[in-house]
Length: 237
Image (tube, rainbow, N blue to C red; front, side, top):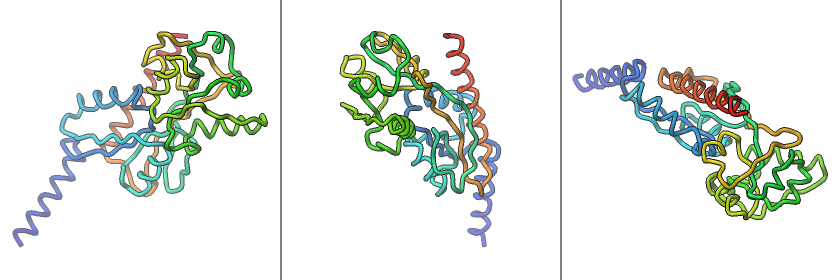
């Protein structure tokens, strides 16, 4: 009986910690390129405000984040659309332009068409996920509609590696504008697409489970960070 009562007390304390943001662990999934320009700021903001809550920030491709939220391995996530949203609540958070990055100023002198992109040496990241990567899905759709095929000359895993290779002149890559701004554009030039291309960010959570206070707090911080990023880009323009 004493052991049962002790277990009840521990369970009650654990629930109170999560409810009052006094403890527990938040598992949150992030799309892969977030590591280049977002995760560090989010973690710092959250830890300053809620130092007793542990963070488990998992960087995955968006479709894997969706799967892990769906099966409750992660409580919530910030992903790039499109993904399969079965069993998920999805709320669009921000739209951000994708740009072509090149060391050659001639290839960034004017807006880039899909035909021009197909002629350039192309470097793409998220090599492991290939066609599942949301940006690639958009590019493939656009190329198919134009009757052409995109064949990257180099595929790597991380966006930092792709930008580094572009800086060495080994090809052009495609990144969110905020990512190239964060990493620094020295030695690089970038241009918009003639038909603008965007990443659409969205928060996801399970449809059948309410968010914990920790998850809600983290989402609020992420929304503020995304808004700040957007404001800086607009001000830079």
